[in-house]
Length: 138
Image (cartoon, rainbow, N blue to C red; front, side):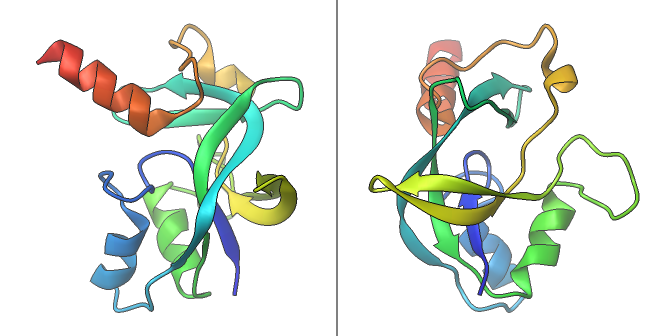
């Protein structure tokens, strides 16, 4: 059973909620292991964030789930990751910190070149940032 770190629209209650995606496809619901962090920089693409992995940067907040193998291709589809094609997001494995201990997870970062001139999300938490941004715009 793969572990996945989600930091943006795949988080619970967001537009691409991981649980809702599993439910839509008749796949067993993921098991939440907890909130975790990975070193990186988060950027605002408008309706979703992009994570640039950076071991020297501040923690980016997300959630770790154990997911059914069948859910990984669904996540690839949501993130538009296609084998053999250059895409915005890539799927890779990385150690993230869960309660101070490293856990190897799949995650979907973007390349540094994709974020040129985009606003950086200070604080590293997409959900908190999006709520504040949307509230300010209302």
